[in-house]
Amino acid sequence: MGILNVTPDSFSDGGQFDKPAKALQRVRQMIAEGADIIDIGGESTRPGARAVSIEEELERVIPLIEAIRAESDIPISVDTSKAPVMLEAVKAGANMINDVRSLRESGALAEVAGLEAPVCLMHMQGEPRSMQTNPHYQNVVEEVLQFLLQRVEVCVAAGISRDRLAIDPGFGFGKTLQHNLALFHALDRFVATGLPVLVGVSRKSMIGQLLDIPVEARMPASVALAGLASWLGAAILRVHDVQPTVHAVRMCRAIKNSD
Ligand code: 9MG
Image (cartoon, rainbow, N blue to C red; front, side, top):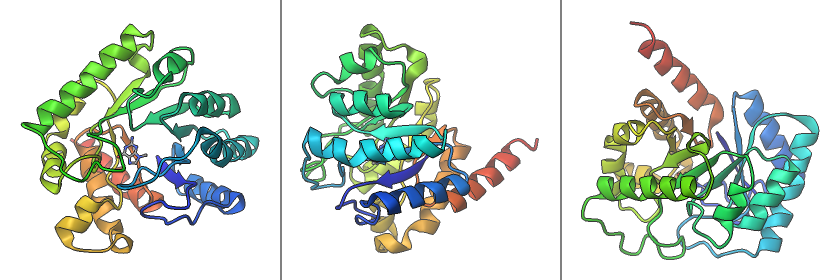
């Protein structure tokens, strides 16, 4: 899953793709590099990010989804928590919803129940504005897993069938470095649920904190973690650097399938 943030304040690509022509060019490049899904987000979820209005988010993502659909049938995921954006994005041609708030925002659950698109449910402690202030868990793996399983049951009860759902531990969303490491170490527990697991660690601060490197130097570690996540059974890798990730994953799969 290639990331396309159409926001002026994204943490790692810093608003490079908030102009339609540049965004479309980037989509073409990610498709050529082997992306299977393009994830489009119009509201930054980086720590401290400001909220945007429904109108602003629609203006950012809908024309781009339409423009991609006019020239490609690549699966498009919309990274949003807002029910009206989910609906308009699917109408414009999006195939999947990626919600960092796990359909907890007003109207989101009912909206998605009325659609057919698959959904990724992500764990986040707190809200982007304050989530990194003092993340706290008794047992991060158990709490994150239980939260996601509960959200799955809420979705199923609302009429969203299990085969439409994917789960995501939400690396960096209300988590310290130790929490992120523990979750990655326990990725097999998430995979064992039988639900597809999405992993998003690309260029994130857990890499910066451990290696003490700035965001521009985090590609090699991101690719290594993507390979490891794929080895451990992750189904979807949300990444900025598509081509090196595709190469790493192909090598991991070839080795895994060789015995
Ligand atoms: C939008 N977004 C930013 N980071 C993410 C992650 O780790 N997972 C998912 N599902 N979405 C993310």
